[in-house]
Amino acid sequence: MALYEIFVTYKKGIFDPPGATASRALANLGYDEVGGVKIGKYIQLEVADGGSEARVAEMCDKLLANPVIEDYRIVAKEA
Amino acid sequence: MAVRFGVVIFPGSNCEQDVVHACHHLGFGAEYVWHGDTDLSGFDAVVLPGGFSYGDYIRCGAVARFSPVMAEVVRFAERGGPVLGICNGFQILAEAHLLPGALLRNKGLKFICKPVHLRAETSVCRWLDLPAGTVLAAPINHNEGNFICDAETLERIKASGQVVLRYCEPNGSRAPGGSAPNGALDDIAGVCNERGNVFGLMPHPERVVDPATGGTDGQAFFTTIVRRLAEVAG
Image 1 (cartoon, helix red, strand yellow):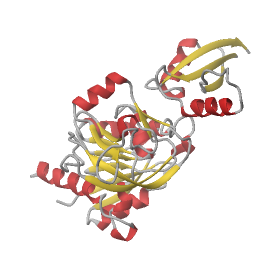
Image 2 (cartoon, rainbow over the protein chains, first blue to last red):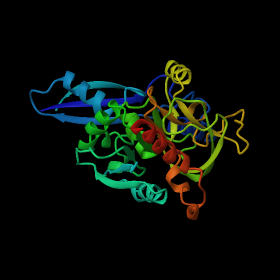
Image 3 (cartoon, rainbow over the protein chains, first blue to last red):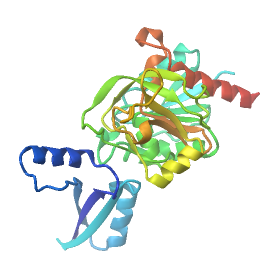
Image 4 (cartoon, each protein chain N blue to C red):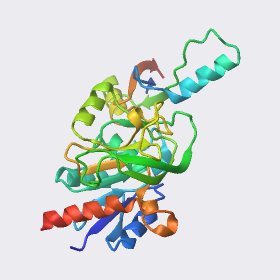
């Protein structure tokens, strides 16, 4: 069993409404040092032996991320 | 010509009855198509209605895109068949890459349900042929209607007449800061594919077909495609 961690984030230049709202809220709370907030998704994928990172990337392209607006990063972990 | 609309029901669709009612009100045939069905023969046009297919999980429309019926919707569209995606239907068509761009969460993070004004643009869309600048009133009812695409795509769809509808002020003008209540890029409310047969929009034209529900500006989409279908059938 392998564990993959997937981080899905908006592509550069794509407006991130929750991130922008969090950024404003933090500024309102006095955290003036915050220059920006990006909010994405974290996905844990358990994959049976014989899977591959290439197939995980395929899953991201097809379903877990939308390549029109999102980038993803895959981190392979020992389960 | 007796036109038949096929209205697809995904698990979580909730506007399919409104669409069927709108079609019947105009004297057109309309029947439900279950998302597990794979036969669209006998339908002249296909509508993907609004709702919350698969609970909007992962992304709105991301799972519905892989429903069995969608492979057939893609083939129907490739053959030039008219496909209309309303609200969640628009999101599904965008996820299926039948339409350009994507729908992000509304800029203000609020679910917006209210009447808006829309401006018809000069486009290749087969579902609408009103003079550019014609103002329509229709309700929006969504949390993820914030249309986005990259700059290159925006230029391309503008140049090829794929921008069909923009949010506007009641007089048809666009506010300097944007008229889209959801933050949509370039105030875009509806886009079509290059051939103009596949069309998606966030507002709900089916809710303004029967005057009993508050307006008739939505009739144009249904009557236009039926007229076009009749012309082709000739």
